[in-house]
Image (tube, rainbow, N blue to C red):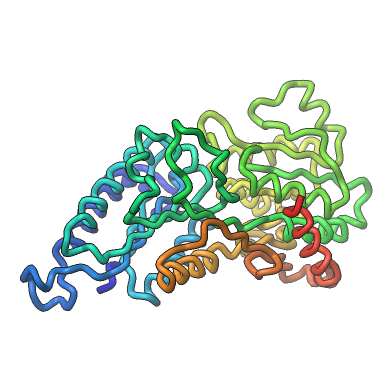
Length: 403
């Protein structure tokens, strides 16, 4: 039996209105189906209601589905694997981080009760957490300690976008995160290559100015992407400025720099991935002291820059695509740093199906083919630079993670 669920919601008022009731409704439906469906669909007797399917439950970034970026790519990969392997899939999309705590507790408790039934002893459940942002939530021992105990845990847990979790990360007051498998898709190598290509792209401009726009300054994959790009482009930055907290002195300093790094997160969007309007305001404000290229590592917030590109056309800056090939959104996207998180999801799910577990930590980067730099149509002159520097970018990524 394939129980296929895709809680996709558009970026609109409908999304915000339905997120809570929509997810709770399907939680009920999923549990009901899980408990009542027979293996062959022909009998409801107790001996034929034993559930043998594998189940994948995905916790997405709050308000993240429909971002046409990272979240949607991850979802595509998980559902593709589900179709190919006849898996049950359930998507959970919290409205905010506080809501995610309640939803995780509810789902953990519900499915532990289901799996605890004797007739379901062979059922396998994989919990997927879409972002490192879930790490601090899962650390709360009083909330999740009983579920994350390393002894005879009936579930498999997989966290995306996180480096390896070692025992010194958490204390005795935290949940035992040693049961958590992590997969990391580093941006360093592909971003290094993007820096090299940007140098070629802007070579004919006099005193070109570039800004790296990050969602926040504490998630490792963003820092790695910034460092890789800066190294490839051959420029350094003095600090990472926060747009919403910048002082007048900071603003004055940034006006005189040819390479600036800044973050977009705020109290309204603590991680900075859902701040499309803020990104648009940044583009507008910067137009009075323009940059030639934006290198954004900010999830769905990138669409604020792309909207500005579409409105102003060739008179606007270049925007590097991120996570997927974004050349379809604007002719001002010369290249995209692509992370094949869908392939990574399929790979990890295959490991889970085949081996019954997922390695504690995996890094899948440029050399392994999980990241790449895609040159947009109309910018084929950049392809040679990308090809000539690919091997160097792979080696630089290796060295970066050896330190």
